[in-house]
Length: 517
Ligand SMILES: [Zn+2]
Picture 1 (cartoon, rainbow, N blue to C red):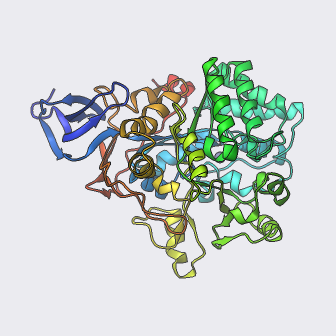
Picture 2 (tube, rainbow, N blue to C red):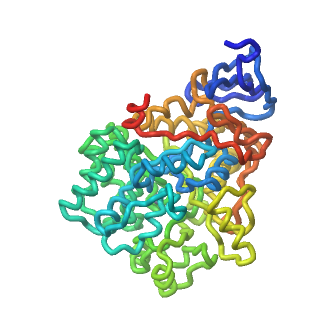
Picture 3 (spheres, helix red, strand yellow):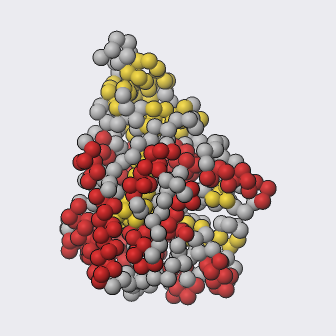
């Protein structure tokens, strides 16, 4: 140990909470070379001492579900306390190029991708060319292919046996290249055959890599609806002993949440390896061309076009005719979809059932910021979306979960509604997601913990004041995260984002991790 440099930085005087050991005391945290090297009351020598008294010192939040894999997306999440943000539900393809492009550009937060199953379907069934994120800025997001080729003719439908083989081969290649599991947007390609899901589950079981699934149906109906879609996943997880993660249990279960919760509990009790996550909002966000937003399907599912807000114009969709029109012109356009009316106490209780489900992770489902059509701010907005601009200009918009999911967990679920304790909320934002990935991405076992030897991914925040900034109409960062460290490097300092700080590292699936360690 060098003299006078026991640590690079010491956080002193904070309330330190480790969700794994239950440690919850006022203590100093020493960081050196990207790891936590001390937690206790004997303050070590350090280059830098930061007084964090009055604040909570927790592991950085781990987001299993963020589509906002660009600089603006990462920076908004940094201010929301996130240190690792992963695109696991949609995934990417080719994953190696996505990892390389993000590494070359630099990221403030740790990042990773699953294998994109719909991308593989688009490639095999609609001859969509491989994305090129290294050279084409319009391919930068993992889900770019998904947004761009929504109107492809066949990717939503059943594939024949040789095509299924090719899809599975493409997916397997991504796992070999370091993808964390497989992103399965089943609800967007609901025509796929059972044999294809069986093939994915077999791959998941053999590789011990989870399927991260947006379930096949959100319909509020008895047969072929949201509950059957979850039963299908439990069944396949059980038959193949495959690890399966049900994405955003809140939004895909909708009004069927009570039955979904019962079914999940029973499955987990008999040892089925199924995990889940939720986000604290009554509305979701997706592409307006999604199969389940077809006006006829909406009607069959007891939903109406008026529960959709189209972000490009800000309009609430007035009729089935108008919805058809928008879907034809801009199928990849982003919209908000209301699933719970939070002014109704019963509806709120339904959402809380998902958010308090045992061992459910908090996961944001963040989407990349987009432009709201305000001509006055168009140029600045477009530059900010494509490039390296901070602070973000006016005129940007995204579902508020993209900038404030984790703050909302503390401001709403802990402080206001009191349905989670502070410690339990921290556990759901850190240790639980880390544990969900422990097998698929071994590096995650050093994250989600505030202990000696853990990665120095640390979030220092004020649990009394942390507050999301934006809403559905305007984008604003969270306030109340005072310091954020990623691998020991400061990304947020005294509440301010440091735009030049890009310490984020790739998190790979186990195949690649084994190759490089
Ligand atoms: Zn989804």
